[in-house]
Image (tube, rainbow, N blue to C red; front, side, top):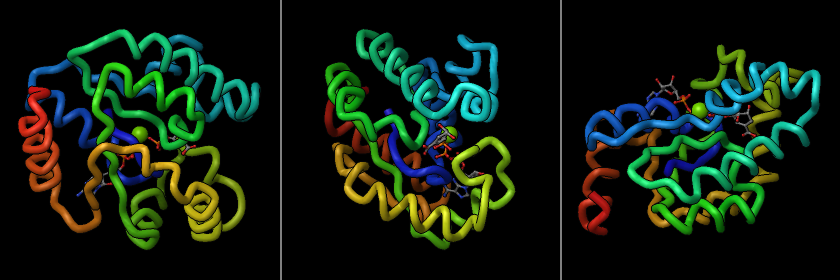
Length: 167
Ligand SMILES: Nc1ncnc2c1ncn2[C@@H]1O[C@H](COP(=O)(O)OP(=O)(O)O)[C@@H](O)[C@H]1O
Ligand SMILES: O=C(O)C1=C[C@@H](OP(=O)(O)O)[C@@H](O)[C@H](O)C1
Ligand SMILES: [Mg+2]
């Protein structure tokens, strides 16, 4: 399972990793959109962040008993320690990180991240990174996707999973 801040590449690399190792792929944001019939943006706007976080928690419970999956989480999934414990039960937590400057450039044109929509994008990214300092330390293994190409990042994750006997 991939954890990390918005724009670190969880959704993109998760899909590629699943294809490479022959696992099914789940993006928790897309799964929540499917069960609720609403976009992430609409849930945040109409129902509020607490509702979105409770959908994430519900999904973490369901996913904690599954195996053979690559899961790309939303950036806020691991802010709830119960989710971390649930997801660790049955899987390895791969952390993705990147410097603020890189994240800023990657999320610049993204419309599906309601937490970044209002106000100054750079300030929002920097504030959230500060608020979440340490949250992604729950990972068993972390790579910096700002310093690696897609192929290199995939190789790093794949090697780690092989070394741990996961694949
Ligand atoms: N080396 C890299 N690893 C991961 N993503 C990268 C890399 N270089 C550029 N990107 C881009 O960064 C963006 C990451 O977005 P996404 O996968 O949606 O991240 P997340 O799900 O973590 O928010 C994508 O547009 C992707 O193409
Ligand atoms: O960091 C967060 O709180 C969020 C990250 C988003 O996912 P990505 O990390 O895939 O962008 C999405 O779940 C939602 O907008 C909230
Ligand atoms: Mg994503």
